[in-house]
Image (cartoon, rainbow, N blue to C red; front, top):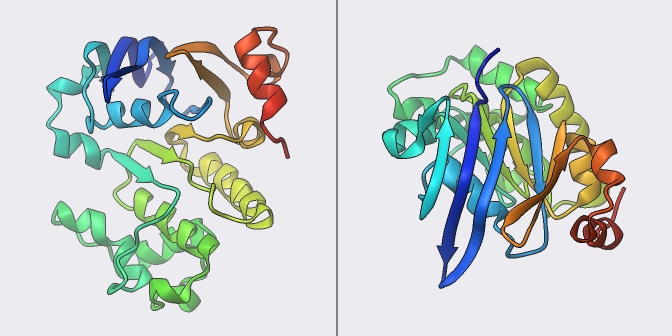
Length: 243
């Protein structure tokens, strides 16, 4: 049996004088997609930033691939964690192909045109049509697809996704949900996803973790979480829109 890929072990951290996570414990298996949901300010993004050592816990331990994040060179760790944000920051002076190929170049590895084309095809962007375009020529959904391709370009084992579809219209969002499920069926990354949308969490995740009061109020399959009788979980289930 393999060890969990990401582990939060009794993690506590304060931000701005307020304790955000308090004894937070979670394991994420290799190739699993786990969605973290919760009210604003409950520490979802903080949890992501602990994984790639943008933050360090005040107490407890976060480990990736069996190593405490504090033992990792932070640059090496971050290159093993693709990061997808709500607003993809593509470099405006680079073409889509150049943006996608950027991260491997930081490790002195140049992607071939064929490799870039394969990544664009993976995320549903036709290379002949999109490789030479500038970010300003793309729709919001197309920019998100290009951002996912860039996050995958260095073949990181981990994808951290922070409200990656939150700024998109419902139709585009649903399309990208389908694309992410298709991509994950092919590449099997370990994905930690933050979302405010319980329906999105249910649609994308193998397990859904509900953060409340700095701890994990529930973490199970969408079907089990949907039946939870925990009052904190029920408030989220009742308040969050589902699609």
